[in-house]
Structure formats: C-alpha cells, structure tokens
Image 1 (cartoon, one colour):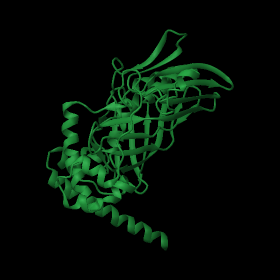
Image 2 (cartoon, helix red, strand yellow):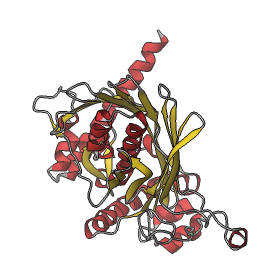
Image 3 (tube, rainbow, N blue to C red):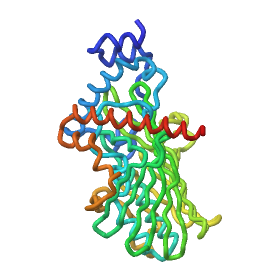
Image 4 (cartoon, rainbow, N blue to C red):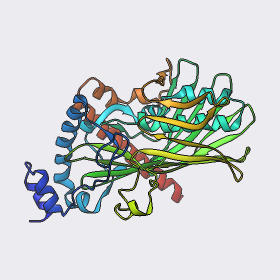
Length: 382
C-alpha cells in the first residue's frame, strides 16, 4: 500500500506506520551543551503546550488524508495551503509579530546611547531576546492583503503594520518612538515548508532601525528555524545560522553565529562528528569596526546575551536575561482603521471558541482573496 493510500484509509495510523510507509528517517540528535538535551532548542513541554499539540496533531491527521504522500515525502509550502482553524491562535501574524519585540526597553536604551558601538550591542540583545519570545504552539492567521494592525506600547512607541503582498506573503511594519529618537521598520516574507515530522521556515526580509542621534541605520535579517515533532515525539523549536548586523555610517558590523562550531583540540576532534561539535543554542560573535575587533558577544538565544567588555565602560556585561529582563506588550489603539486585524470575523469567532463559525469565515475570506487576486492578474493584462 502506498503512503497516500495508507493515510487516506487509516485514521488510526500510528507514528511507526507513518515513518515506515513514508520512508521517513528517525530524528537526528547531537551532543548537548549548556543545559540543553538532545539536539537542543526550545521545548514545548508545559501542560498547555501539550494540550495544544494534541489538538493540532488530530487536525493534521485529517489534513494528511487529503494530501497524502505529497506532504509527507516531497514537502509542501505551508503558505499556499489552507489549514484548519484548530491549529490557529486568534491572532493575525500582523498582531503576533510584536512578540519578537518583547524586549523593547533594549531598543529604547539603544536610542539613548551615545556610543554607536554600545548602541549596536543593545540592538543585538534586543534581536536575540526576540527569538526567545517568538515561541508558540499555535499558528497565527495569515494576513489578508491590505490588512493592517495598529498598537501602542506604554512608553508611547507606536506600531503600524500592513500586509502588502498575498503570494509571496509579505508583511511590512513601522515602529516609532514618540520623541522621534528612532524608527524601526522592515518587511517579513514568511516562508515555511513541511516534510515528515518537521517544518523549516524563516521570516526573511530586511529589518532596520534608524537613530536620530547621528542619523545611522542598522540593518539585519532573522535566521532560519527548524520545528521538530509536528506529528509525534517532543515538540522542539530550534534556530541556527547567522545574523549579520551592519551600521555603514559608523563602519560597524557584527556577525552573530547561532550553534557555532565548538573549539576542540585535535585529539577530541577525532572523536567528534562535525554535527555533534556544535554548541547547541549558543551564540557567539564579534563586533568589528573596520579591521579592529571591539568586543565579543556570547550567550544562548534561550537564556542570555553577554558582551565581554560590556557597555558604559564595562559596568554592564549581560544586556539581556530571560529571567530578569522586562517583557513589553503593546495594546491595540482605540480607533483603528477598518482594515485592522481585530475586525476579521474568523479571528473574532475563534476568540469566542466557535471553531465552526471561524472555519466558515476563514473559507469565505480566502475565497474573496483568491477572487481579488484573479482580478489583479486580469488587470495587469490590460
């Protein structure tokens, strides 16, 4: 029996059959470091997480009956298929994107920092800390083209976001300090593909922050992620790769490596594979001005960011700590545009717990969006 047929006819398919029929390998594991286990990453292991995961997996099995081996063997672009509302949270991606900016205090401190090198150190901590906050078992709704979201932080920093493209899905945002000390802006093209028991994705797109103190702009892009345990086993989110920060005006740059290669002796390297020599979840990088190394950053994207020489003349080294750094959440403004995410009927019904009505409205909105896309294509022909 083929994989597609097996999934389509057996609702009680277990994970062993799933792997065997679809020729999926076991998950790979590497040596642990710094309090992590297996291949590291953020573990979704709370009671609430496990309940959400259970509900998601039930919904995914139903989905698999329709797509069969295409999803399992070859993978599928998740931005191009309609998922059931059971796997969603009652927020749009435009609303959820602010989770990445939970340590906004660091961005505000950066704007008040005179030394451009110290400013960049705070910005690095702001971005790395954001990776830790962008963890959720549930998926946000894909924004509809033209959809907006407006909110404000207690400090007065405002957020304006808009969905500017349907396929590829691109979100744009503008975050401003009320005193015009900084402007944080950018766009995110969320790309995600599922294959077997995992999802690989990335919020690609340039992000930048302009600072009024000297007119400098620092830019960067987020690293790729790997979410394991979609269908069975432990659910784990892992980041890896590099983040490049650039301040051209002040000739500053910093490359932060996530899961860097460990420094090993010749003898120990004989006993370690290249993969297992990685320092799971650790970060390491150098702040450089021209050819000169100014400082070195270390830590872990799950727990902390520390600079060897620190800021303010070495008085502070650890700029972000998951245990002590305050988390900031913006609130929706009282009178938003009618295109605001909060007016979407599918989100409203899901928030009330009515999944049937939410699913019905989600299907209606998707059909409207497909119709509008056809009209735009026809318009381009004339």
